[in-house]
Image (cartoon, rainbow, N blue to C red; front, side):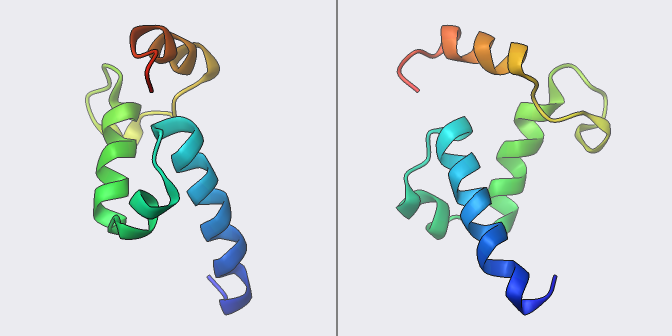
Length: 72
């Protein structure tokens, strides 16, 4: 990633972490890349054998998670 691409990518990822994971900005910036990756892989697993092969959560999964965990 080029130097000029880091800031926009970080801002987008921080927004996604807030919207999909309920993380505050502080939680995002304190998390290591490994911690963020582990959470994303756990969400993506959704029954897949290997998290690396799983697709990211789709709208249906996110809606189901919101129903199951309404407090975020």
